[in-house]
Amino acid sequence: MGCAFQSLRRPPRHASLLFLRQTENHKLQTANRNVKLVRMTQRRIATRVSQLNGEGALAVFARAKELERQGRSIIHLELGEPDFHPAAPVVDAVRNAVASGRDRYCATRGIAPLREEIAHYLARTRRLSIAPEQVLVAPGCKMALSLAMMALIEPGDEVLYPDPGFPIYPSFTRGLGAKAVPFGLVEKNRFQPDLQEIAAKITVKTTVLIFNSPNNPTGTVFDDHALDGIAALAIKHDLWILTDEIYARILFNGEYKSISLLPGMAERTVIIDGFSKSFAMTGWRLGYAIAPVHVIDAMDLLVLNTFTCAAEFTQVAAIEALRDATNAVEAMVAEYQLRRDLFVQSLAKIPGFRCHSPEGAFYAWVNIEDTGLPADQVQKLLLEEAGVAAIAGAAFGAEGKNYLRFSLVSARHLLEDALDRIHRVSVKWRGVTA
Ligand code: PLP
Image (cartoon, rainbow, N blue to C red):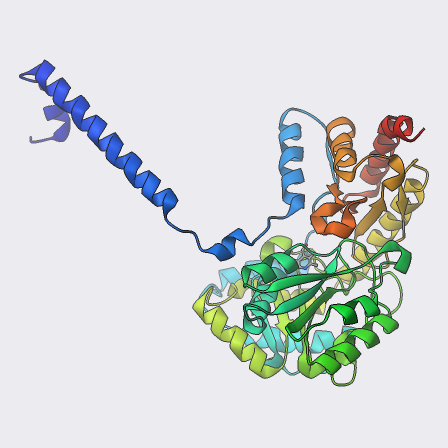
């Protein structure tokens, strides 16, 4: 049989000559491969990629995981990932959807029943009056956000965004060839935006203002004064408003007010929301945008040119999440509120730490200036010595340099443990400030 294995076993006739030829061939092949590699690495990567940033939380998470592998006990307060899972009817719905073959390509802008349900849900929870044609479903809020940004932002535009804020806003803005212009959310202003600062930063090139309320990382809910002021500026300067309402349901007081409800705003507003936080469905990758129909049409074309559609079975189950037959959202928010109160009250007893009680979302934004240490050093001390993973605030913008963000996504007994550990390790900076 002319089998390749047999010919390998046959002794070479001129073994030494063959060996020489083989090594020379090998050398040549290696040299060729190296030249090719050099050429490959020299070949250009589009400059837009060099404008993008990563997310600080993921770097801390990677180090925390490494410490865990070494046998250390770590309390994870770094990622914005709920420790809850979707309610049972949602899990049943996805199982049934897969079993009944809802696993095909589907409508690029999302299946009609989900878009209708989103319209009902927003009418019920946010008093918004929107048509299903104004809804586009995407795999995650980030994708809905980036589609909206691709649809609205031109190279050379200026885009206003909150500092501190979700790091993807400036990153993706720069990736689109536009200029990211921060506006501060500072403690002396209760982390509300300074309207005069925003007005002063608007130029003829400003086309979009992005904000997020409740804000990640400060937990601030923009008040009426801020919303009215931003709306007035948007109308005066003909701006698009991109409002990231991903934490709208995680609100500890009152009713959520979307800027889109203000007179003249629906036509210039894109709302971003989704299932990751309010329904604890981070890994399902499901978000949506609400916008005027011509914006949705533009985003729909981008969908067609990129990911085609979000998975149909997750969309079918998302309808169940929105209906929330077991009142899972209310129970989850009540638990977040207990965690917030526990964490903020106990944190006040830790020397050098200061924290406002967040009005929404599930983050504690802690001022560490009085420790006398830079935030990245406090972050390191907490992780390496106390086994508590949190993120130094600079990951959310320059205004975050004296802060740490703690995600309250661990059970109360773990938060208590984390607080004890932080208290113990705080002797390190008590020495510094003394
Ligand atoms: N917007 C904000 C403000 C966020 O905090 C996050 C996630 O942390 C996202 C968007 C991304 O959401 P998703 O996981 O649905 O893409």
